[in-house]
Length: 331
Image 1: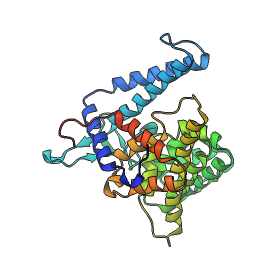
Image 2: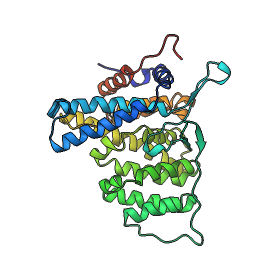
Image 3: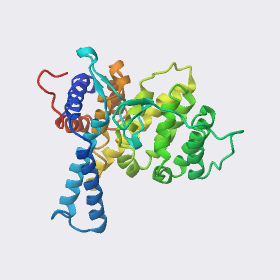
Image 4: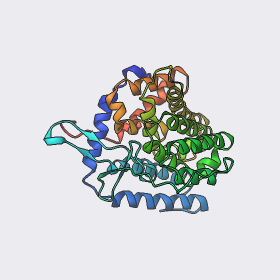
């Protein structure tokens, strides 16, 4: 199956996904909660090597993959889509994945409404020093001084360095990725924050297991797309580094999927896998909608650099698209 990247119908694909998301809004959060609870039960059964609903071994792993895919799609229920004045225009709220943090600078309230993201006030006095060689200390600094762009950059730079040395330790920290996305949302216009956040994610993605599970997330891809879409002036080195880092991070996450497929591994991955999750994130990415060349450019880079074959792109495009169907009339 040969698919030319520049011919991908991203606009049609995105319209189909968004139509599905709109249709799904009628459901409650109960179904998503049930899926997530069942996911935990299945994972526990796999760890303990015990049957679940009469399934075990490879059949239970396949069931886990099916549940992961359904969970990924049900995340669209956390997106608020509106049609102003009954017109055909559709406005999407940012995708939300890690701990309810949106990649676009907002969070969703209890009723699903978009609310501005507010930074916590920093401790009084001069910023405190922190141990740059300790993940917990770095993340604490990221949280304590999240309102201060300069301190956020210092902490993100330290986090990037730690991720380069030991990606699994940084990725395994319960709040590191969550707070990184939060800092990106709070300081989206600060090139230095974007630069070091992208380097940190890219370094974490060196760990292929981490890339397949924790970084394979709608919110992570949404953040990467937002930075990649900026296409800065080459003379602006910091912004250029951020832009290149975003593309590199996507490439490493996607490469983990290619390696996973080529190895024949049966280990489960998060959701529908990196490529399909990327396509789903595109459907809710405002930058991708504003500039129709963003995603084809990214896919072309992945193919040109031999990160992923076009056949796998086509297959994962279908995986994402097969789970949605535009209602009559489309969007």
